[in-house]
Image 1 (cartoon, rainbow, N blue to C red):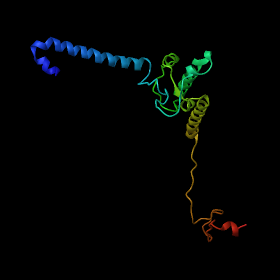
Image 2: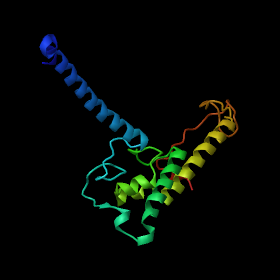
Image 3: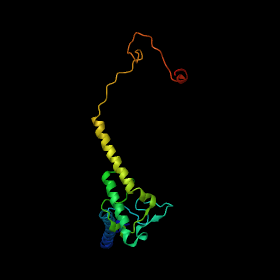
Image 4: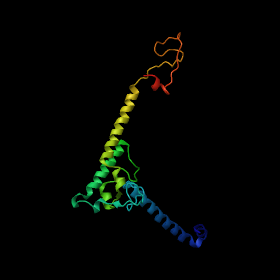
Length: 184
């Protein structure tokens, strides 16, 4: 339809104006979405849902601003974000998150961030300590496996006695199916 208007000299100025307005409106929306997602580190964050899993479940959402002591409401956000930062440093996030490293407590407070108790527990101090321990064990395993040397073993020879290593005597076969009743 816009192309048909362009071909008519009478409507050429109007159609250019129309296209320009549409371009500005669309580019403004795109720019606004891009800036909000990059400035705040949030990719399609649904603040009415759990900020951790971004899913609607039967489990109730909890907002630290609506619970707890009056002076300590922001501490839940602060400690949660500190734990998230430490999980990221260990490269051991329990679940993928929809927000970046630059999200701060102010943004959580402004949007009244909520979470499920089960999701929040995945970022507890206990889970963080376990992640640190796993990371330490992973690095120590790599170090010890590099320093270990394999022993050279000879292949098992069925024609040789396992006790005296001689080949000249007659060998006996022994099975342990009912051996415990006969050998005591």
